[in-house]
Length: 121
Figure 1: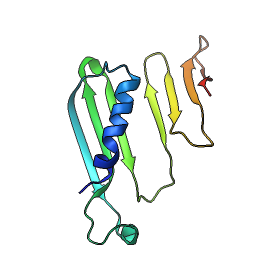
Figure 2 (figure 1 turned 60 degrees about the vertical axis):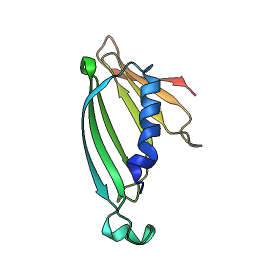
Figure 3 (figure 1 turned 90 degrees about the vertical axis):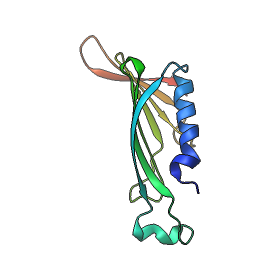
Figure 4 (figure 1 turned 45 degrees about the vertical axis):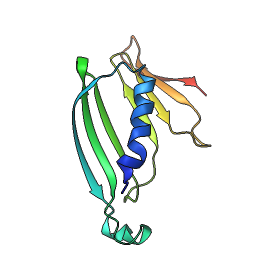
């Protein structure tokens, strides 16, 4: 039992929906999961068939879309970040670690340049 979506998905989606004030109402979703790659099988319990990587596209009422990806035991470097992209700007968050204790806001200036501002540290 378990797997990356069962183990973490409920927390990730709860966090995201909470950040948006519970205003997003999912209506359609499409997802794909993958199991642990063969070269990393020695890292998990023998016979494990739990998924270790998920990508989902969740379409919400009103045109908002959630693009979700979470993985472990993958052939890539760790990165724990979020981006919330809107019509007026983008909020970038990193999962709390000692090296990334800030939230950035990217926005387009009147000169049509993208600038970043720290909105929480």
